[in-house]
Amino acid sequence: MRWIVFLPFAALVVLFALSNRQPVELRLWPFDLVWQAPLSIAVLGASAVAFLVGAGIVWVSGMPQRSRSRASIRKAEGLQRELDAARARDRAAAADRLAGTTS
Image (tube, rainbow, N blue to C red; front, side, top):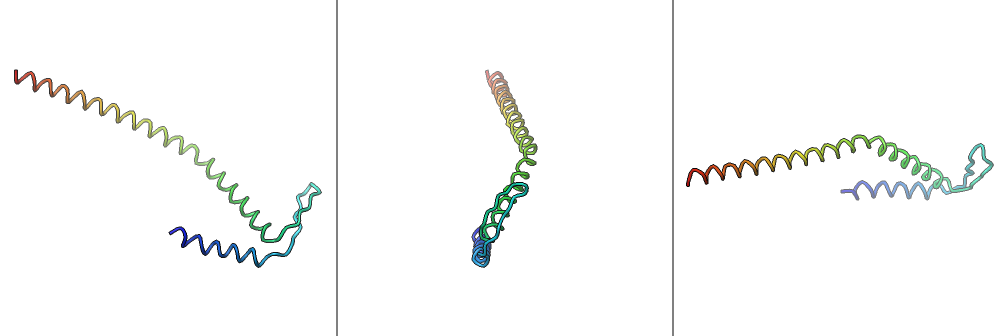
């Protein structure tokens, strides 16, 4: 299923890169740096950086939720252990009562 989405997108990226090979000058103010690169590299590079920054923001903003989720899982596991122990005590008590009535 992923390939159905990925292949057309990859084809568009390749076509964009092949169609935009003219060089552009990239400058970073206030520095005096100049870098010449094909237009497609400049646009795709900027898009990749923006994607990574956005992914980082989403990852950082999800940290509290993941922390709460882990805490809830630990609490549920502790409660499950308590429940299992209580059931084991109830079974043992029932077995003792049953053994006491048959003797």
